[in-house]
Image (cartoon, rainbow, N blue to C red; front, top):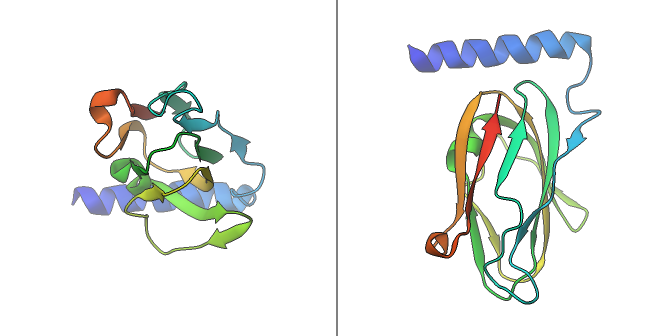
Length: 140
């Protein structure tokens, strides 16, 4: 029943905004999320990012360190409508959320989405949580 209500609310929210225009246009760029730095593989200058439900956003996640980073934000990815993931000007479109984003080398992945569900959603870099590579997406 809860899943049905969540889906109905999300559909209603998207349908209401869709009638006013395309939600994927006019998106807001969020602060860039850096994983590592040239002098510190575990640096994360921005850990928490705040958003509003029902709005369109672009999040750039950039690996700057020398480690392999497996970025997990499963609950968050399930609580948004994913428009696309962009890597080197190549677009990935999907019918569901990604499992995780993996950075084998330095580079940027841009995630474009519309927030659907409010709440606090943790993110982490698998295996490096103890080094401080965690944070939260806060959707109000």
